[in-house]
Length: 143
Image (cartoon, rainbow, N blue to C red; front, side, top):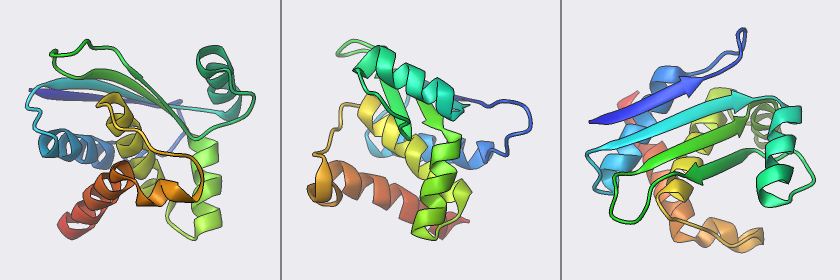
């Protein structure tokens, strides 16, 4: 069984069903039939605090993820999305805010599953980016 928890502060619009569907699709594509993920939307101050505390970053970031399982265990992870940063990124890219929130949830889930990517322009040529965008494309086809 795949369980996806989506948490957000009251008053924040969140495409909960779409996030759940995207993560279930991501997990199934990767061969997982059992997993548990928590996706939590937080503001700029909280994502910056988490970024500094756990990764030594000194700025607002868009997504952080934490794998909570050991090798051979069913995937278990926490994904934190900076909702304000996601909305800024969507505006800069000319995309829908909900699409960016879903993309970041998938991105975070892939990190929990062990994917990584280089920084900079090579990022979009990575295997992780390809899988992320295939999931996103598949969701558009099912809408």
